Length: 277
Image (tube, rainbow, N blue to C red; front, side, top):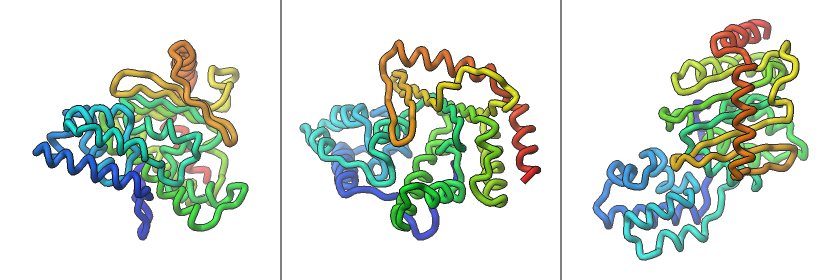
């Protein structure tokens, strides 16, 4: 999603993330490197490096090891990473997957419940948080909202990453918020779908059996070409790295892409849904 962080809010972080970012920055400057020079040496984008140094991103294990090696940091970066704590706003069982998302060169998402989190507008997401059971306080809602918006920044920060979203038609027709919010949400999806690295497809209600009936599914390929899958239910999430299991999910997603409406037909249906609001 391309929404800006709400005015008066900044992406939440933790003191350990800030401290880790400062450690990386000190060693980078000691090595006489700018962020622009450092980023390709560790194999990560400039926005990613900047976010880590600002304490806004949880670094991957690969980043920690590469930074330690490139900056010859005497084990300090590796040691600092042991004390990192995740910022609030993410469910604990989702943290591992969220840490992988910014590293993705390929990211596929199938969702049959709601608009996928990465493409939600701030207004749509706020409605979900406000109606969640058990109820959340205002501070928690704002914390979750800022984290959701920041997570989705990968859609604009990583234009070289290939994104694919398949969403069930009924999830788009379900009016979880008022008409204005839903129209804005559809417009946002249309806007994202116009980007050359983002494909959005709708699984039509008229489609009978399809390969995704087992539930929501995410697939991700890292810069090291390692593939992961992620499946989620109520209050639970499972990160899957076993190659055989991931391969099965890849096969299912490939079939779903063939079974869903084409990208072009999806645009027409989205405009129809918007017009009916």
